[in-house]
Image (tube, rainbow, N blue to C red; front, side):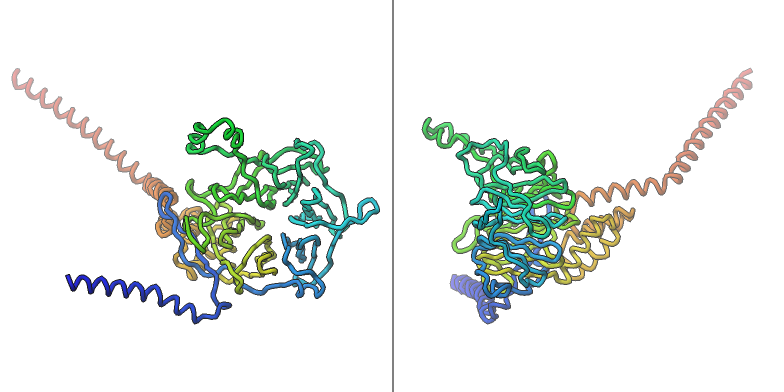
Length: 501
């Protein structure tokens, strides 16, 4: 009994040492040198995902503050959005639209517009979007309008409350985010509009509500409703649809939109012309954002990811931002997780309250209201390889993608999708046996089964002539055998008859 007690005490001391030692080590590391987390999700069986550490895809470069842009500029305490186009950044900060060059040197600051010869100062601005031809659209919620500038930042038009929009006159119309597709159609997210994204025709007139998200009450909600009084039912008669939080348009003209509600399993959608979600998912149980998290907690972010930002490259890779844990997740066109990184804080390489995110070449740039700054990250070698592989795959250059995936595996041998990427390239080139090995390493049952069936089919095809020749010989031999046997039997009967005679 005494020995068991000693073993138990020793075990407790060992566990305490193991838990306290890393904390002591981390305490000696300067705060500005603690790197943000970087990982990727691997898939293993139905509904099983687990995070695996990975090299950083982006590294912190610099923090840009208001005085770095212009000495007289107001602090970035009200920054709401940032977009990049053709070597310039467009930043909405309170009641101003700030435009800088590629290195964040001030180009101009817009504080209002002249409408019909009368100066109108901006109220607080929010979303900003730049079209391919350089036209700028800015959402101004309090003024219930979207302002359209040309490529020279000259006023083109004011898009107020859309004509023909089916809402009551006393209902507020507060556009917070805006995007424009390749055909000039304008998409607006407005506060309090739960019917969907407001779609305007190119001339600014209302067309329809787009991509409405239907909410189906759960079995528990339906059961509770059965026991409610009539007054309670009136107060809860509607389960309002989820509202969108951000949107953009990809190179093919499809709308990417995010839902910030943490209860939905599809917080980002790619909407076609009919408003249907066509975003690909590699598995039926696959979701975006963190798939492993603390359901409860004190002093730490708990619950699923809350997706509030989305950006898309011209080769199908989309970035989303999780405001719950201040992390970025990237996915390829088929929905495979390429990387995840980030962290919450005020130290270098982390963010506090991101209100805007944009892609600027090889840089990923955040508007961080919490730190009153613009946070700039650039791709690492690892990030370059992953993105190059995804782009080659998108361009159908599968062997080129495989070469990059091999380099990725050199830096991160625990990345299952890299094995899958090599396997897909080999599979499409007809090397099915070699592809099977990589699919097995990537733990992908579906692709492994496809390759296995092809290997069997290839084997049958390769040996078809031999098999058919052997079968033909056997059939002919059997027929000959039957004929000879029949002849011999006939001759035997004839001999018996001759002897009887």
